[in-house]
Length: 132
Length: 132
DNA sequence: GTTGACGTTGACGTAAACGTCAAGAGCGGG
DNA sequence: CCCGCTCTTGACGTTTACGTCAACGTCAAC
Image 1 (cartoon, rainbow over the protein chains, first blue to last red):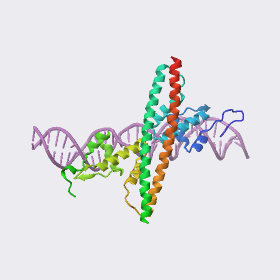
Image 2 (spheres, rainbow over the protein chains, first blue to last red):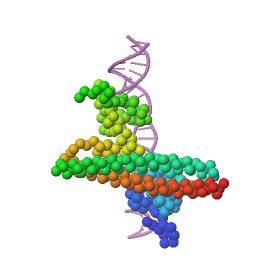
Image 3 (cartoon, helix red, strand yellow):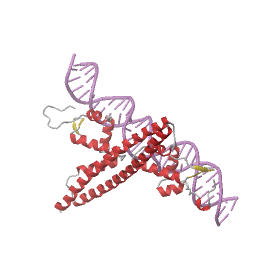
């Protein structure tokens, strides 16, 4: 983490973020290519703010949920859209309810899987007892 | 084992399942290739039992959660492993707790995203009012 | 007996999400 | 000035998860 002495806000290099979040620099640049990140530049080099880091963490959350990068980008844009026109706001609301529907479906799938795993585990442990 | 006339178990063709679950036959054959399905055969043709259909639905649930096919296969195998040796049972328990950890992480991610969406939506609606 | 619907395998194509070089810019130290 | 390190931009390779033909089998219907 190479923060200058007179820097108020900490900034990060691409390798900083790669190490912290267990990614390769290639991956981070790829995300930028796909429009998921827009770090500032000092000459050629990328410098990442805390906001960029937060953005990247949001990407990783999206990945853990199995979302494609394009969907993740749309999702992240929701976090950063400033005051918009009426029409724009309605588009946002629609996207939000789209994403929410997906999330709810996923949560339902998870609840089901979890309870089934409980059953299987219980039978499994039962076996271990009677079988001994 | 002779089934009575009103006792026959329903079976499905590959196109039956494809239509019902909104997949292509190519996809279903691909899943078989990757070891996710093992339908019976009548000559060359595949015939799917209700159990096969259930299996396929489990695959789709795994897909909705963004799991890779190999992971889904392992997960499904948990549902069907019969009484095993002590060692085998312990392996199963380990896999279950692995999968459960993933599911819990996913659920946490979902809860976070949902509550953040609530916030964004609220601000959005507020804008729609004041902005009018 | 051939047509058409349905099914089969196999080969090849493709999009997404990166990994892996290759070649070079910039920069601080010795 | 040169070395070593970090960072950069391509270009190409790879894996996963299928799509897309092509070529052929089968069986009931016309």
